[in-house]
Image (tube, rainbow, N blue to C red; front, side, top):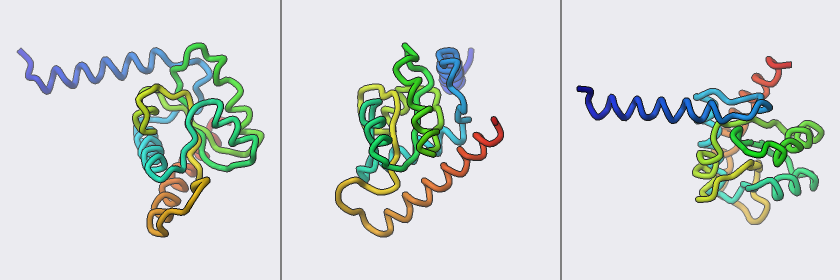
Length: 157
């Protein structure tokens, strides 16, 4: 018989497989495991500092108002029509975007219990100020993830 840790690993692999099967066909560029981890970490840090817009309505409103940032879109949205216009808006506004496999993981990183279709990570908070040290740390993570996303996007096209 297998050990508990082996059973847990097998269950984890099954969950990962289900996430990949639920992906929409337009979910490109899709973040790999490492980039997905870094992106969700950035989303978590941005949520702590109030530098995050959650949901399609808020994201679209922010993009149209000219706010710059990094758009993270969940790849397992059904129906897909809900988010098909978001990548087009991002490309028109020169905002980098990336798909992550799960809307549940995106919601957990964004500090909400409700699954989230997409979030926009802003480079600075809309209201108020944050400490200089925290601002630099957030900006460093933001720049790192944005450069990784631009590399993936350039390799695609």
